[in-house]
Every structure is written in C-alpha cells, then in structure tokens.
Amino acid sequence: MKPIGYWLNRTDQALTRHLDALLTEYGLTRLTWQVLNVVHAAPGAADTDVHTTLAANADTVALAAAIRTVLTDGWVARPAEGLLTLTAQGEARLATVTERVAFFREAVIAGISLEEYGTAVSVLERMTRNLENPQVMASTG
Image (cartoon, rainbow, N blue to C red; front, side):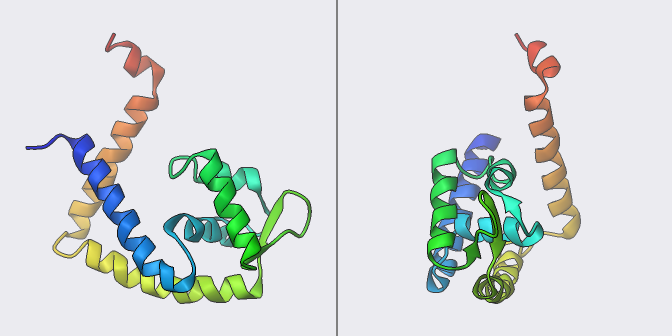
C-alpha cells in the first residue's frame, strides 16, 4: 500500500489537471476560480484575505498572479485600493462554472458514500491539526 502522502499529492494533481481542463473553456484555472469564489463569498475582500484563505492552495506569487488575471479579464474590480469585488461579468462567469463544477464533484466521488467521504475529510483534517500543533510535533523529536 502506498503511503498517504503519495495519494494526497496524486489526488491534488489530478484534481488540478481535470479542473484546469474543465475550466479552460471559461478562461479560468482552478486557482483563478478559487479566487472568484473567495471574492464572491466576501464582497470587498482584501487581497490579503484571498492570500490567507488560499494559502494552502498556492504560494504568494501564484496567488498574486491569479488576482492580476481575474482583474485583467474583467471578472473582478477594485472598489478601493487593495479590495476586490466581482463584476457582473464575474458573477455570471462564476454562476455558469459553479454548475459545471458540481457535476465534476459528483463524478469525482462516484462510488464513495457520503459517510466514507466525511470520514476521509475528517481524518485529513485531524492529521493536519496534529502536524500544525507544535506540542504534538515536539513529542516526536
């Protein structure tokens, strides 16, 4: 059996590859789509909010580039310096893409019960909390 790190990396790479392919016809990537979702959830979000929310998904350089892309493409605007809001075009694009992504998610979890999915997410969340807890990790040394 391969270790969990192998499957985590392989799953994330596969998700990115397939989402990028799905989103390309809409002029998006997985990361730019995630930026649109963050801004949609918090209109007037600061660039720093996007960076904080998506820090686990990409590094600072990639996130800054994704923000520039959605601004340049007209899906996001700046109502004030350092703040982001979806444009009407961005709202429409996100609504269209959200429907496609829902079908994608269904395909990804085909053959996996909601209980199994919940267990997998719960286990990964606990592992992450353990790894991010200095007290737990200090006991390994």
